[in-house]
Image (tube, rainbow, N blue to C red):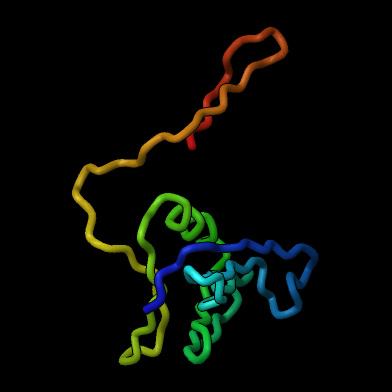
Length: 124
């Protein structure tokens, strides 16, 4: 059960994605920057392949789950990549957190129109 410390996102364009109907990938790394897992995000209506466990864990998800997984990686800590042997599937997990902990704003970007009117705020 490696703890995920870093990640990298790849989004593939074109009609076939990266060639196997994979639209995006997230590579997951441990504290020594070793690749411990890959999450493949497949085009809609693609039959997902089985998750795999070996030197690294490979997880298959539909592409509409990409933003959910990125949100978890950006906002939760610690995060673990795990393998459930009885069901032969991979999953991402966190530790227990207090109810209502919320997310902490670290920075904001204020968006202004051409008349210098505030039109939006993005929280990080």
